[in-house]
Image (tube, rainbow, N blue to C red; front, side, top):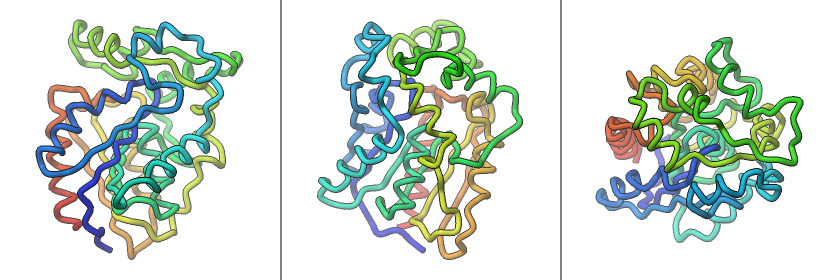
Length: 261
């Protein structure tokens, strides 16, 4: 099942980061002739520093996964053509949920949060995720990833100054309720259902969403009439969108989209 050709890309941001992480990606794909959009999440349309200064943010703390999916549905319905969906982390899960509902002509899930029922025994996943889940803490307050955790979960194996620069530019607070919704029915995928072409991108050094977890996610899909592909990149951590090697992933995605249309 090939995709219908689209010249529009909707970039879907993940948790804990600003939508501006897509800026270079937008320029890259616009130079290839695409129209791109990377909207901020509700309550997060401000610079990262401003959002950190709002923490704890009682409005953002109310954001739920189902609400966020509907937010993107409403954006898609107003677009002039059905878009290609490219999402990172929680955005990758949202891509899966949208494709399941027949939104989008193709999807790319980059270092995706897994749907309900897909899990890993990797210790790095649990070490990275326990803080964001906020167990035994109030869900009325947002969670802001401390720099030390950012170093482990997002920017491991990067030079210290690059880690600091990335944190200052992109790290933002997040809703604990939304993160917990990733374990609920709101994150449920029917893996037997026909869907538009879907590509999973994983990174060999990602701590919070390890490559093995992405591969398990990919292998769950069972519809033989649907295109499903997987690619792992050596040396990519969870900050894949901003690593110096980000064009490796972007070029691969561009070629994959060309071949699937």
